Structure formats: C-alpha cells, structure tokens
Amino acid sequence: MLVGELGRVLAPFGLDLIGVATPAAYDALVPASHRLGAHAAATRSIVVVGNGGGAFWTAYRRHVASHPAHADRVDPLDDFTTAVMEEHVVPLAARLAIRAEVHLPFRDTTPPISFVHLAEAAGLGRRSLLGVLVHPEYGPWMALRAALFVDVAVTAARPAAGFDPCPSCPTRPCLTGCPADAVSHPGGWDVPRCVAFRVGRADANPCVDRCHARVACVYGRVHRYPDDALAHHHGRAFAVMRSYAGSGVSGSVT
Image (cartoon, rainbow, N blue to C red):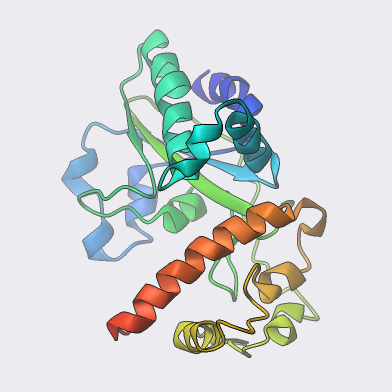
C-alpha cells in the first residue's frame, strides 16, 4: 500500500522512481563507516525515491514560475525536494500510521548514507564507468532525491535486478565522448583528470554545461535532461570542482 500511495502522491512532481531496500542489503554493500547497524534498529524497509528523465525538473520549473523568489535561494532545487517530502510524504505516512524518517542526499547524517548503494540495493540502477547510476529505461538520466526509513516491510519492483550496463555495451561511446579523456575501461572515471581539465579550461571549456560522456551513453537517450537542467546541475558541479581543486585535497568529487 505504501509504495502505491507514494507513487500516486509523488507523480505530479515527476518523482517516478520508487524502490525498496532492506537495511541488511544496504549494509552488505557499503564500507563499515556507512553501515546503519543499530541506527536502523526500528527500520524494516528503506524506500528510495528518485526521478527518471526530466519530469522532476519540469515540476520544479512550474513551481518557480508560480513562486519566482524561490529561484533566488541558495539551493532552490534541494529546497523544492524538501518541501515535497515534508508537505506530501510525511503526512501520507502519518495517515497510514507508518513511522517514517525522511533522509535527503544533501543533508549530513550519522552514519553517512550512500544513496548510490541504496539505489543498487533497491534494484533501481547499477553504477557505470562514469560512476553514475544507470537505469535500464532512463539510462544515466536518473537522480536520487530521498529515502524513507519505515517500520513496516514493503516491496517494490526491481527494474535493474541483474542489469549491468557497461559490460554488455559493445561501443562504449562514453570513452571517446569525454573531451578530457577522463573515462577509461576498466578504470572508469578519473576524477582528478576531469577536475584538472574543467577547472584549467574555465574560459574555453567544452564541458561547461554538460558531461559529454554522460550524454554519449547509449542508454535512455530519449530521457535526457532538458538543456537548462543540464546547465543547472553542471554549473553546481563545476563550483564544487573549483573548490575541490583549490583545496589541494585528493579524492573524488560526488
């Protein structure tokens, strides 16, 4: 009942991907630092909420059109997500007498939650050479928006069960599509090389408004995000990369 009702409530906001993982399945995939363990003692299921394609962005733009000042917020898309969860999902759980804790990928938690691993445990996608999740229908054009830790056992479809995108791809255009040559097989995404290329060529950067390797992926091309959505997400990622490059800290950018 919960998954079906969530689908009904979230459909107008373009949140059309709903999967379910158990805490045990998630803990089996992550390093010890991310395991839920006793922190999820009362949790029987974790409901993962996301979007495939551009419907979520369309809903967000519709909200901004009605509330123009919203676009001036520091994190307008995150705030929109938060509002949807608080105004629609939390009341739904209360009506169903379900205890639900809402966790969002842009908020810190203890222990930290890996939404990529959550989605894999829920059968919503598999990681690609690019490091991003790939869905059998939507390809890399999916995003994870929230997770509900609930005290009831629920189930949902697992569209990516048994799916492993890159080994079965004969052409791998993502490799040649990257202007920085930062994607390789089997190495995957070379984050320092990507950052160095993008930050070092800020004035003539072919990657300024999109990841060409992601656009080149053979999966889900008809569901590619709209150009203004690509520019929004890529602009925010670029700001993180600039901060990362300036800090001198080695590691990955997520």
